[in-house]
Each structure stands twice: as C-alpha cells, then as structure tokens.
Image 1: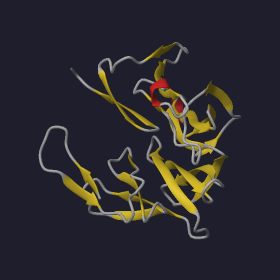
Image 2: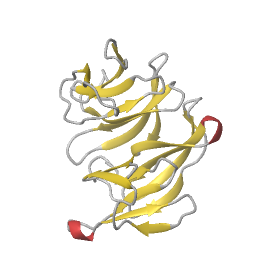
Image 3: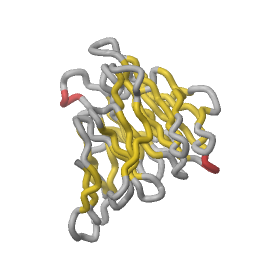
Length: 227
C-alpha cells in the first residue's frame, strides 16, 4: 500500500494498494503522478497524485521468471527506466529497460546493467549510471529520445552491489555528487561510506553533515535537512 504525506502536515492520502509489494519501489513523475511496482513485482503502474486513477504502463506477459526490481521516472515525464531481473537463483540476468509513458512501449537499452539511475545533464541529456559486478559504469542517455546515445564508460570500481541482481550501494546527491559503499566482504565493520563530487574528490563519511543518510543494506538515498 502506498500513501502520500505532505511535509507541512495533515492527514496521509492513500494512493493505491498493490499485490505482493515485497520490493517496495516507487518514483514521482514531473506531473505529480507516481510510478509504483506491483503485482508481485511484475508490473509498473502510474497512479495520479490524488490516487483517483491507476493505469498499468508496463507488464511482462511472455515470461514468468521476470521481476521488476526498480523504477525511476525520467525528466520531462515522457519515460521511465526500470530494472528487470530474469532467471532464478544464481542464474540471474539483469537489464535496464526504458518505458515510453505515452504509448506504453518498452525496449532494452542496456544488458547486464544493475539498477540503472539517470544522472541529468544539459538539454535533456545525461547518463544512465549502473552497476556491473563491483564496477559503476555510465552510458550517455537522452531522456527526450529515450535511448542510449554513446558508449559505456567506467566511473568507479569497488562499489558494493548485491551479487544476485546488482542492487546498488550508491546514490546521487541533489547537486550531482555521488555516494557509494566500498565493499567490505561479509564483515560489516569494514564497509565504508564514501562521498565523491563531480571533480572526483573523495572523502569518507564520518557523520551525516547537514544531511540525513538512509541506508538499507545496498540502497543509499540522500534526504536534505535544514538543521
């Protein structure tokens, strides 16, 4: 079940219920709707901001071993990028798929790409940043054309990610910095949280300076605070 709560206060607004939300994943679009993963992680639906309308924008019908792992709305509201894992147990195959939110068509843009995230650039261009093993990679991407526009380039090595589906240990700060885990094996105390800015300067995070950092095993999120 998904709810919306205003930061200024007031009652929570129920948006929708989804079946089998064991992978809670949602993303706000630029027009105030929200994309949610549901139906036991096999569909992506667009829910209006008031919860009055729900429509399925993506559904896999030709395979039963496909799981929607993540969804992210792209700038402009015309598309979204989702991560699909195909297969079972140790035989996983992960792909980045772009969904057109106008005609609901979709196509694979990157193979072996764990949890692709869009880092914006000028004029609707930017990068899809994703994990492959312990490497962070990036591919130039147009959020207007909904397609990769160049070759894959390496960004970082030693980034912690889940071995079965590439669940990432990195996230972007609002102004474009990168936050990520360096792997520490099975020993949690050896894992380090590190920040890198756009100039490539790195520093280990000793405490959340002016920011609260939410970490859930592999997922990293930034949330700004004022005090």
